[in-house]
Image (cartoon, rainbow, N blue to C red; front, side, top):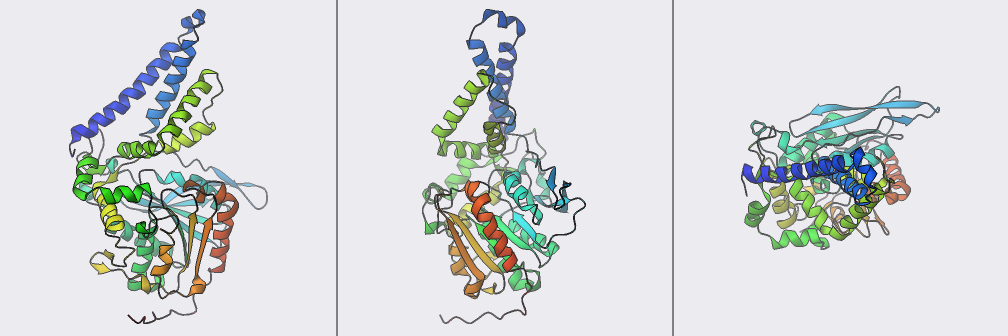
Amino acid sequence: MKYMTTYDMMESARNTNEWLGATARAMASYPAFALSMNPALPLMAAWGEVTERTFGRMVVKPDWGIRSIPGAQGQDHLVDAVPVVERPFGDLVQFQVRRRAPMARKVMLVAPMSGHYATLLRSTVASLLPDCDVYVTDWHNARDIPVSAGKFDVEDYTLYLVDFLRHLGPDTHVIAVCQPVPLTLAAVAYLAGEEPAAQPRSMTLIGGPVDPDAAATEVTDFGRRVTMGQLEQLAIQRVGFKYKGAGRLVYPGLLQLQSFISMNAERHSKAFSEQIMRAARGESSDHDAHNRFYDEYLAVMDMTAEFYLSTVERIFKNREIARNCFTVAGKAVDFGAITNVAVKVVEGANDDISAPGQCLAALDLLTNLPDEKKASHLEPGAGHYGIFAGKSWRLNIRPLVLNFIDANSAAPAKSRSPRVVAG
């Protein structure tokens, strides 16, 4: 499947469906047809409206949409998303709050590179901004990156995180969400071995696959069933001529979206059917609950082929993180080198993507970290999304994370030497 034609055919199908939706909406909304009083016409216009929006959102990067936050004295502070470190495959973005002094808490939020944009964490950022200076890893869509920019795999991802942490300094608190959890752990361990003074104060690891074998899910089962050759043949395509990254090998976002939807096909089908009926009755709006969710959910990005394949092979199949045998730029990463960074693990009891136990395995890897610097929390009834952006995050997890940050904000008195563990 590694042909531009395949990629372009998929994009053509998306474009055609968007055009069909726009055409149906325009035709059924023609004023003269209103005289017929035909109930099928509003239904056709509603179908067109929902279809056009659905397929149009698939190739649009959502805006952060965080304009301002309330200040302590009752006034509003405007917010600007400004890149402070720029790289070909991703930037470190600061949410600068105008007319506000630097906050005591400085947080680097590590966003997933798993098919969605970093804006998936919009509500997480918004909830942290009143109390923290917030920085986010904003990964770029691989289809827009020229081939001349080179490769980008799990080691490059890890080194990007290392560079971002060096830039922010040691008074930083890291919050990693889902996919980047094991690589964030690796980045801090790399710094612990190479540049201990640049390590952050704390890490909060939320629902990530440190040890995929700790608890089976549909994602881990798929990783076991398929061979790397099959995966490369089925999933990898070349970016078509429409984009700047023409010719780059990628795992297309549209293909990933198909996988996302197929996991809960009945629920998504019902949601779109109900939205069409609401639109036909004139009850839908531009920012209703359906559109707020799906405008983000449907906005997908391509991942470089080497990043996708190396993630499956090294994190899921070979379990290099879980077995403490991960290497970066030819150097072994030893998680036992982390001795001063406080680590908190957060999992959702109903998480069907990174099931409970997968992220908790991180604490077992930190053999030289004192127990008082380790913490964990299992949120009852919470699914994958809820532990970083839903009700569970807002009501329970966010306060716990902020308290953990406060408890571990002081600089360590001195660097500890790793204890020797008898083999």
